[in-house]
Image 1 (cartoon, one colour):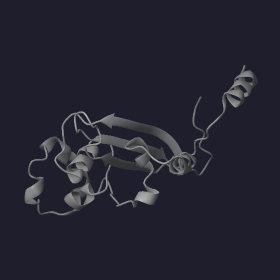
Image 2: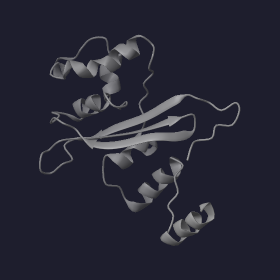
Image 3: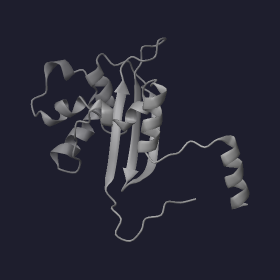
Image 4: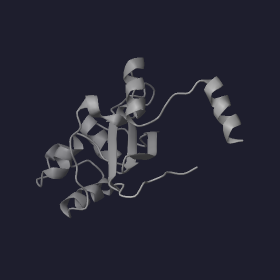
Length: 154
C-alpha cells in the first residue's frame, strides 16, 4: 500500500478541522474532527472526543486546532487583541496562533457546505455523508466488490 504522486504533483498540506460543540449527551464534551491532504491525496483523518468540556463552540474549535485547524477559532487567531471571553482557553492551544503570526500556517474560514471535517464531528444525512465521502476521494465498496479486489490482489 502506498500513495503515488506523479511527477509535478503538489505537496501542499491542506487540513480541514471542525468541532461539534457539546455533542456528547452524557458528558457534554465536544468532538474534534479533522482531515488532512498532501496535495490531492488523503493522508490522515481523525475524530475524537475532547478531553475537557468547552464553554462555547469557538472554544471547542480552538481546542481542535491543537490537532488540526478550525472555523470560528480563525477570528481568535487573526485578531491580535485577545477577547475577554477567550481568556479561559488554555495556553497550550496558543501555539497555532504563534504559527499564524510567524506566517507558517494560513487559516481560512470554510463554509459548512465545503467543510470536509463535518463527517467526523456529527451525524449527517445519508446523502450529505455520501457526498463528503466522494469529496475526500474514498469509495464505498460492497462485500462482493471487496471479495473481487481481494482475489485480484492475491
